[in-house]
Length: 459
Image: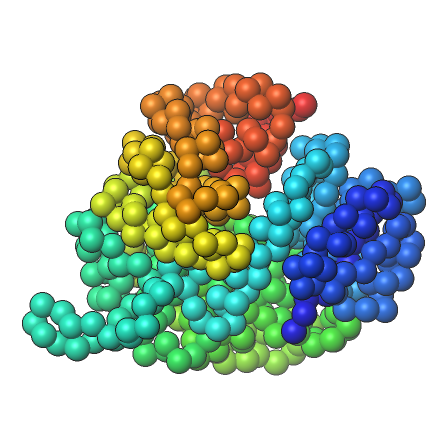
């Protein structure tokens, strides 16, 4: 089904440009020039995506975001602005915005955000791996003992660390143990969770992935356990929560360390009782769900600081798996490169055959602190900019080329005492453009906004 997109933009020319571009890409697009008309359209129609300017003559993007969350909770929202205010960006993400993009931007950047979200949704719905689905048509493999087994739907890798990691996935998969997946940001924790699900007896049931960091604590109970019509303002229909949606299957809780203490208590009770009570309901529902969770934080430290419940930690951590960073499995680098290249070609309608020798050398020398996510983004951006068969050096981001300098900065960045200064240095180097600064630091814009708020950096 064609995605329905509504753009709220008082700049007629810019709105027309975006409309034309997105329509060419197969989307059904409509436009509002004011907040008043946008509210009317949102109330009377169902849109998959709302793209709104932050500053409108009669309204604000944040207010429209809140309105859309109440009236059309399934509509996703992207905010765009030329003002790029840090506090507003943080508020937008916390209030449930899909993303936040600063003007001026190329339409292709917006398309990449939309496609990333669509790919993630397709992953959850069709039970396919988000970033490492094998392109091979062969679904079976023969092991060293000549035993035929089902082939995993992800890039296995040939490095020793990858072999050990994948052995753990195979071992714990057939059990019903709760697994805590730990690793650096961007290593593919959801892919690992999906692999565990595929190795389990629940593989033909639902795999539901939830980003705990994106759920406001005020509506977390409704998101996890559902609600009944009329239980609170905006509850216009009965809603199934994630637990009920995953009944019989697997529920993956990404960034579980971001849950509030109150939400941790609610989650613990659901895990212990195997029953949930939708918000506003008087009856409980039995659920059979396997819980997989992931974090890039030190949960034991959070437990010692009183930020994370110790009983919940042990409940989630019946078995733990550490995902090796891309730097730890350099032998696998070009296996992932080939996959992401094929994915980018398919997504962008290109036919780039591979990397030039110079780019291959730059990739080998780079530390890849952003791991698979960074590799995927670099390749997709490079494919977009390449007009030849091989990706040339000039389209590769500068941080990859100046790897020695960047590696030193990355090492320092991991030290909390230097983190604030490194952020300030990156902002200065990027002329205070937050998007560019995030790229220099090899972190996402959302992470940068959180750091800016944490260190009270005002621009």
